[in-house]
Image (cartoon, rainbow, N blue to C red; front, side, top):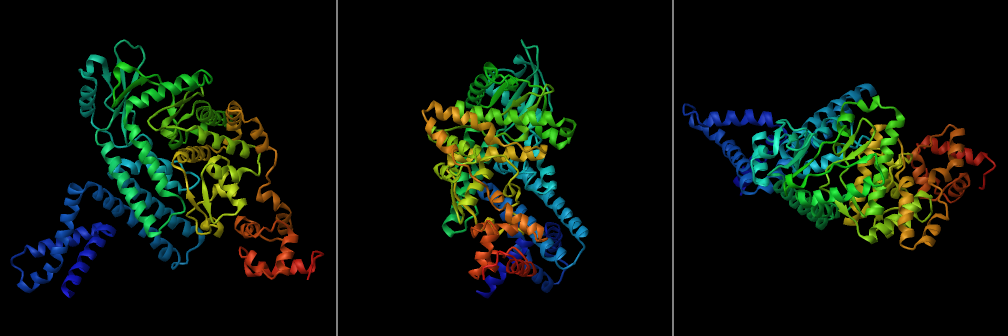
Length: 593
C-alpha cells in the first residue's frame, strides 16, 4: 500500500509539473529518459531514475491516448491544463508578488499589467488550440470593456473574425461536395485568403458569373459541429455535478448551458439561417432603410454554404481593435448605436424573432453610416408569453415604475439574498444598456465588491429569456467601448407599448407607468450631502449597507444609533469614520438619546 501511494504521489507530481511548469517538466522528462536508457550507468542509479520514469511515461501515454479514445474528456482536460496555470499565476501575484513585496502603487499596477499580459497570452493559446464552444463564450467576454482588463479584450478580439482558417483547397472541396458541381462553373474566382474566419465558418469574397458585384461565400468548417457538441456535453455534465454537490455559481449556469445546447445546433443548419436572414431582411428594410441585411443567393447555397451579397463597410470588431472609432464624431457613433438598439426593438416586439449574436464581428459600419447585420445562425424565436412579460418589464423600466421588480419575477428571473431595491437595480443591469448605475459598472471579480452584491445569486434564468440577457450584455460592452451611454429601455418602450396595445393591454400600460420609482441614490441624496459636508466618504461600498438596512436619511441614522445597531449599518466606514458620525449625530439637533 505504501509503495502504491508513493507511486501515485510521483505520478501526481509529474502531472502538476506538466500543467504548471511545462518547460521545466519537459527538461526533467528528457533527463529521466536519457538516464533510464543509458546502459553505462550503474544499476543503483538506474533504479532511482526508474522511480520517475514510469510516472512520466504513463503521463505521456495518457496525454496522447485520452484525446483519441475519449475526445470530450481530452478537451476538458486540455482546457483545465491551460486554465489552472492562469489561476495559479494570479494567486501568486496576489499573495506573493504584491502582498510581500510592499511595492508602491505605481509599481503594483505595473506588476498587475504584466500578469494581465501573461494571462491574456495563455487564454489566446487556449482558444487557438481548442476553438469550439470556448470561442463562442470568449466572443461575449471580448466585448466586456467594462469588465475585463484591457489586455484580455485586446488580445481576444481575434475570436470575432480572425480564427485560424482552413486552406483554400479544403474550401473548394467542401463547396464541390455541397453544390454538386465544379466550383468554377459558378464562380469566376474566389479569394484564397478569407475576409473573416470564426469558430463555425469562414467567409471568402468571390466573383460570380451573371453578377456585376462581388459576392461573399460563407463555408461551414467540417469539424466545428463535433467540437461544439463535445464541449456542450462536457460543460453541462460539469454544471450538473456542481449542482448536485451544492457548488453554485452566482447565476443559474445549468439553464444558460441548456439554452446554448438548444440554440447552437441551429447555427449549423444554413438552410434555417438563410430563411431567417430573408425573413428579417424583408421585415426590417421595409421600415428602416439605413439598417441593412445581405440578400442571399439560393441556387449557390446549401446546408453548409451560404452565398450572399457583399456589404460595404468595416466590422465593429475591426473598428474597435484599430481604434478607428475615434475618427468618427460623437453624433455619428450615437446615431449608429441608436440604430442598433432600434433594430432590436423591432425584431423582439414586432417580428418575434431576433438576431441573438450581435458581437462586433457581426456588425458593419458603412461609409454612409448605415448599420449592417451579419450571421443569422443564432436567431432566437420568442414565445408570446415571454414577449408579453418582457414588454411589461420594458414599459415599467422606461417610466421608472415601482413595478419593475414584480415584472422581473413575471419574466421568470429569480434572485436570492436580494432586497427589493437591489432587485429593481438588477433588472436594469440585466435588461437595459444604461451605465449611470454604479452596479452596472461593477466588476464581479473585484476584491472590494460590496457584501450584498457578493451574496446575490441569480438562481433562475429561464432558458428562453437568457438570449435577451446576452444581447444586452453584448451591446453594453460595445456602447462602453464607444464611450456612449444610451438607455435601451427608452428606445424599446414604444415598441413594447405597441405590442401590448395590439394585444388589448392599454390599461396595463397605464398601470405599469403610473407609479414612479425613486432609485436608492436619489432617496439617499440628503444623507449623501450630509456626509459630504462633514468630509465623510459616500461611495457605493459605504452606502450599500445603509440601503439594505432601509436607512435613507440622517433621521434613520439617529434611529439606528438609538437602537444600538449603528456600527453594523456603518460597516462600510472605518472605525475613525464611524466614531466621527456618532459624534456628529450626538452634537447636532437630530440628537434623540
